[in-house]
Image (cartoon, rainbow, N blue to C red; front, side, top):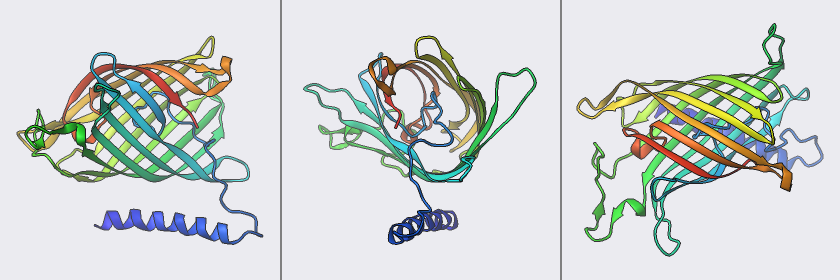
Length: 291
């Protein structure tokens, strides 16, 4: 309850700042909301707030993501920013007659701060150091696509918990990156300070790289060490590597600079909270919009 109270207070302060700015029309606005964030979204991280439609190639599933990060404040020298994150990550079943019942959905919101500064590191091809820290809440739910109309009951499947169950997490996430205009490498750490169900290892780790290639194409890789759930123990023990490899193209040649066509290969622990216990492997091909 104390952790939830801290998040509520932080969100209240942000809301109050927005209202004060709106009511003080003659003064110089304190907040300048922009989608052009100081810390650019990680290309291959499947939990990054984004707009994306990514059908699975092996199964009749569809990933639908709706979300974004917004910088509400930037310093005058553009080396510090504070903002908010909002996102939904949906797993849909592809049915007949253009129907897409939602199997599972995750909701995320939070606040963040980011910074950057120029660096010179010998012969390494990087000229900027940047970072982003986030305080976030995420909850997950099964929806109509996980409900059997014939039996009037939830589809239990391989879930080790009785459905429906509550899934909620609050966490702090830090990512630090070295970048140049065309390349970036990064490392991250996440601390989970509250979770339902409990018994979850609070520590997870992240690393990745992004490489620009000819013709507005790019390659990106995101790697995480995520806890493995042991159903017999009602807790997590050990870690599993989770990869998301992405090859994409920015559609600049037809005037769509903020649109990417991308192919992903995912292997590891599911990104969806309702399947936090399940390892998955699949390939997606679809479209991502960068606001």
